[in-house]
Image (cartoon, rainbow, N blue to C red; front, side, top):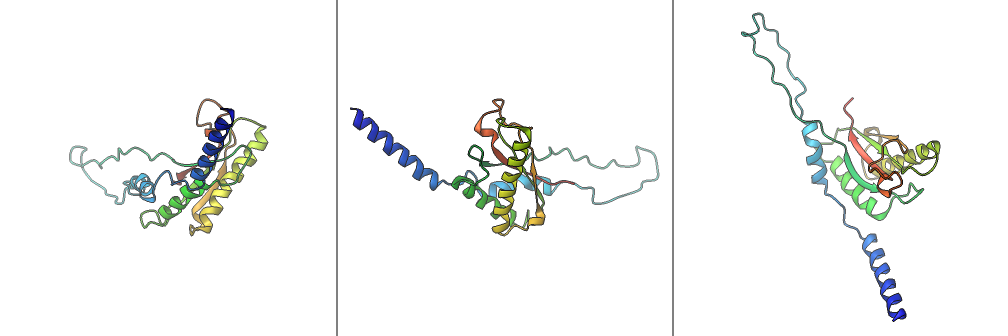
Length: 180
């Protein structure tokens, strides 16, 4: 009984490792383009006009009531105390690089934000989060995205994703469309 349980556990761990090594990306390039497209097409006030008259005689400009686009969670998570990209991270980043080369986003600039869990000192986590952001920027650069379109920032443990500050979900990189 014990030997068969050990064999089953061994087979399950090998299966999990093989599955992780050939992980499908969590999203497609088209999902990313669709996510950021509204911000790229926002009403930026392309024209100016001067109306001489009363308020009732002058039409008011339409207000852009669109919701600002949130950051895109790349689903790039890291092992404890590591800035090395996993195979699933590489699959997701392949799709992200493909999206950034789409004509809709081809001139967009992004902030790549690195984060850590709450273990360790503030200084250590700030450095680690910056290394994580830089590893993503470097991957994207080597996959055809110009470095000048990407800005790496490290936040350390300042912005946890989940309430449990030690959760592995907090060890991540996110991106935001640069609006400045």
